Length: 500
Image (cartoon, rainbow, N blue to C red; front, side, top):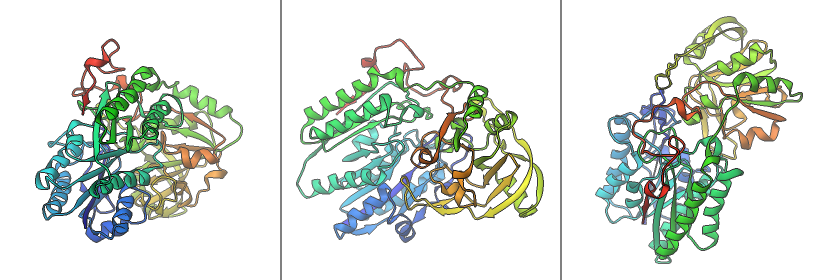
């Protein structure tokens, strides 16, 4: 048996000014061939699970490409073409099965608003009879093109995403069981016109928990897989919104009934998927009153895992204005500052503008650097291994990294985007986050598994960024309308897709 395995992961924020060239998908671009196998083998990711499944079957494995890029603006067309060409060229040679680790919310500049659906159409064209299993992120904007051009789709059940490996294992095992004649998968999908916000997609509480639990119940009732997708609201595409995919063993009617039950949970609680912030000044004032740290200051609008620039300074500026002290900040992406501080050297006192280097035309904001004076405390290559429970085993590469100490704040400044998935964003540069009064994180959900256990409090901060939860500041041009909450009065039944 020969199994083709590949990864092409990107969540596209169409309002983001951050470019997404080929080089964004790995240390020097996506991994190719044997390098892809070595990089992804043993990781707690869908592609890691695909590799383990294939090896358990003693299959011949071919991995033409494996690439993951941080959420950012639309993917460069040349980069997307390279992914498609590499995967399709290998598929055209012939194989027995195809396992694809995709995201489900990729938009490609000058190519397609449905990067995954278009890729799957291309793969189907060159390998029409080869079964295909796909893993998707919980934030996928699922489309009919995705569903009709593969045999199995399974999405993450958790956010923060701590079940990546399990998702790949389930998708791959369903396909392998079907190939052996043990089951006959039937897949149906549907969506509802709700533009849920990611801050309300925590699967351990509220409406999102109910929605995710409805999918789990469908599996307990006999479905092979049931995936409740929150969707990605920062993608200005027609298909953005909440959706579900159900797979049963030959029971189409049962799959359709489960789909409708799950979607009804989302629609009935649509108001609870909308986030409301308090003013930044009030949030920082509340944090100042908290006595015991670490206290998390969550600058969620500038979260790079939502496609933001990771360089806005409004939250730190307000924290310093109100006299907060003993703050660890990180990371801030500012290659110019990194270069200047490295040239100054460890121990040097430097005054320079930090952050604010990128304009954000989609929200009509110019970059606003914050001039700071401080001492260069550490310089590293910015590399560490994530210990979990999300992206466990993956090598994190922040680029050249500097710790800049202003007295009130120790700021981790990096060349590359880096979500604080792991305490390593601090410990790898010599900062003990457990000893700090405040931790200013540009994060909205991924901080939870690693920073909540050490935190004594947390405050969400309404800073500035293209990851904002204030949907009113974005000019949606391609999104289907009407859709909640942009529109209030309409009949859901006439706007939801139901496709078997």
